[in-house]
Length: 261
Ligand SMILES: [Zn+2]
Image (cartoon, rainbow, N blue to C red; front, side, top):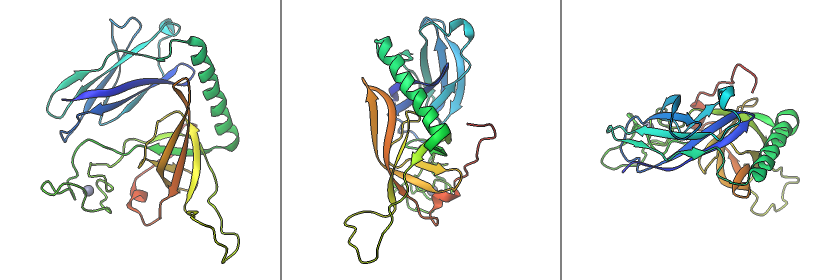
């Protein structure tokens, strides 16, 4: 049965919220349609967005009249089979302690300034598809799995498009390790790996991709570690590995947004 594993709402910047979800039981291949709704009382619902095959939506147009009340969000999904499921209403922060939330929000705000004005670079964070329409080119319905890691339809994920819409943000990526002198044993240091930090959105997982916009370097997320404040995620630290230029992942189109991030 198709259900929501979870639905979460994160403050991204002042009066803008990101609604993020994860599905469970999304075994059917095909298009998943989502309707995101907002409410000031968890009874009267207003549509925020309709999206297809996505797992997040930004709500930056909260009406002034309800900006200072507790907001609720819910998500409705229609599976490729026409099955409809609605999530439970979720509040903007699950933490009942308002003070904790305000402090976390302040940490995010400062982290944002640090990344945008000082040590960060413009990045696109791209989440790997784990459900959706089956690849039309390389997926074998009998054997299953992905046959062609160089497939330009699914990029080796077996789902059409391979990845969800990029989210443009800032992150800090440490330089790659350098071999100082030839012949010096560098132990197990992997020269294509380094670490990256970014804010709490979008929450990444192993296999997701980071694109540095200025250099077009692309990185795989290998390990992700969340910094939380009383269970509220404020920062992500990741072990990332540089993807070789010959990889099909470089065929993914990533366009720098026109307006400033
Ligand atoms: Zn394919």
